[in-house]
Image (cartoon, rainbow, N blue to C red; front, side, top):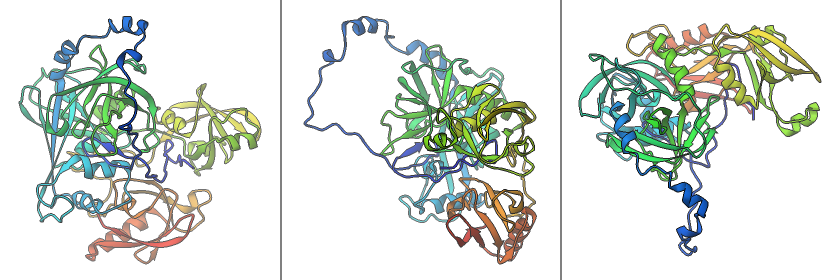
Length: 511
């Protein structure tokens, strides 16, 4: 399976559906196998599970978490958002997703876990001018009111309110969001002495105690405990997946809340659960503190996140690929397509090259490469260890900036497009600029999983040949045709799309 890395490296893949994931504030579902103990299975006594050595060690187990909770709980907040259906087209898209079978993980979570629909429950049509509300969690990271939550909690919010541990309600503004890591930074003004917590500087060990605090089902101030179950989990959300898995019970409404170590530092941001039923089964996923610190710092500084960019499409090196190339191990990322004019292409990176290390650090696979490059600032000079036509070489290049990455601040009214231009949720490039795409049309280089095009099955690598019956060759022509369709009163536009399988027509709503 290829992981297009036309961004820092942006992995695009079809979402397979044998498992169920649930985002906790506005989150989604994939389907799941459930391991169930047979009623007839033999019960095992506790004495058979604990050795004398373990019994001795258990004496060191904390008698409780009361001291820790009293220290950190005041910094945790409940987050409530409102979306006016008449003023936000995304609410209409949200309703459309209710009737879709093929959703991305974070989209499905939105319909199942994030929002409460006042009327029209159970899929029934809602009357016009309804206000959609959703609840999540968050936590203060500074005394002057900066707080962290999930992007999917505050995405498209008309208003945001937070409730502190003492029951006080404040209005908050969204400082910036990063959909790629599902993080958001919000700000409460008016006080300079909010209780706050800090991110941990150390990666938690598997087996360490963890305490989660949040607002599940609107029950603010709820505390649960467990251990770190695993790290480096990929839940199919994108190329930056690197989640910590915990077994502390978390449910809908916990989204954006913190998971603490025994020192009271935040080791992760609660984001998703693996669940066959929608409730907690002890498998939760947290965004690591190391990721959150980097993203939050950029959101606070400029309201958006910029990432390094190589400008290549890559895929993992499988055992078969390693064997065919004479490599000793199936590690690294093989370059499928370098984009013309990209930093990689200018440095001489070619299709078939295998990137094995960045700045001397070994690269495990294409996802590892994606995260590594994304963590570096545009303009950073990097050294790539490359296997090129059977030989090894080192390439030095300056990273570019991931195209179309900047997110406008929610409260400043600015957009990336001209006023009135419909949004499809796509990043595009002329086909002639992308190797192997031909000379006609524009290539889809990135797809917003929450955009209308994604809901109609358009994927990275597809080529849009014409819009509304007119051939297009660049982004400007696409925007012009979309604006023309919108101004003529059309509710959707017909695209002719060429994929690897076939050429087809797709009607996409004008959002």
